Image (cartoon, rainbow, N blue to C red; front, side, top):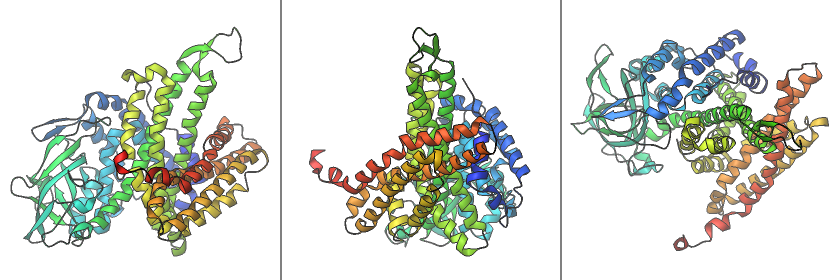
Length: 593
């Protein structure tokens, strides 16, 4: 079974040529990320992903985490790999140096995170949730909470979780019923049950720091009455080290379709008198603070989709090279050939490859925008970057995860019957990828966020700016790239039409607008992906014209041409669905279902 190999050449190309790494590292606070430092980080991360995490991926799938009497034991090898992960400093790559982080730009940590997710999706979830806890405490925590928790969370010696969902409160957080009762000195006792808590219990770290949504006694109803609390697995002693066991226990872990190595816990708070916690920020602002974690998590779940897709593609290519079956089309009496020679297998592989390269480009460009939003001293440039990054988060999360499911399914198809057999490993990627379109808000939630908060609320200002930039970029797709440019221009027209319809319809007929939200998300994502691949093709053409003969450049143009011919051509149909498709979903009577 093949192991993951990081696609460093494409990663470096996207970081440098599309995301503008040189511009990012010139920003205040990002200067440490010199080209030599970034190259060294990528090389070492690739070695760790290939040599340590990838071999454990199948082990995690077949063994999984185990629960017994509130204790969770992770997959054999998991604990040792995590100790190496911490020792090598990977957890603090992009974190605040004040608390022990390395302070590297988000664009760098994004590329490294992609490797972890490709090599071992289930393992990568633990540091991902820890990063969300770090983000929330950095922005909303008190000085005492930061001092108590951030150094060990950033080092990875402790891990973090997000505790939102309850048995009767899934995406509707207004239904959260966990309660927090004040006991004096700024502490609370937390009571309630939380479900679907990734790495809510495990044996890899000395402490687990739970961030928990709960209601105080006099809280108003609904989302306005939710507060956020930090509840450690072990309460801290005066010297800051783990002390007595807190009243939070894992009562079971879920039996899941995929990501078996990642324990998904049901946590009970306060069954034995109350779990001790402290308020994060102000009362009744918990949802606001949790969304700090949520946005970071949504971006990272998008990277999970990218990672699963890349791993499925690599496995499919390896199989297509090795599997000999049939003769080559058009060659009478020819020898048996590898299935890589068959036109439809090539179509499937290019369907996988082209979307992966588009997904990677969108994610890295968004990461660079986040760096500019945080660090650019020009306030106007920083605000523009923030608006762009916010607009792209639903694309990174929603489209990358939906695409990953399809790409992993195609990977099974490339294998034929052997893809349905677990021993080949192809099926695992499909099972693992399936959760990504549900995690941290389903695709519909991402799409509703896109059309509501990101487009209608600001009357389309940011998306119209992006559309203008895409039109300008299309002008460079001329000459031998004119066919790509024509398809990109047509797709932009379809997008522009859909945006105008959404802006005119969102308030007047909100049900119709929301019925078209997911198709609109796919439309917007495809056009943005075509934009980024088009930029790549223009750069590749210039490299070839300058005498560079690396086949990477010709492949980049071929990949862009495939994407234009197979995905940009869907834009018109998706636009029609957005504008006119609501009736089919809304007109049928409830009882007819």
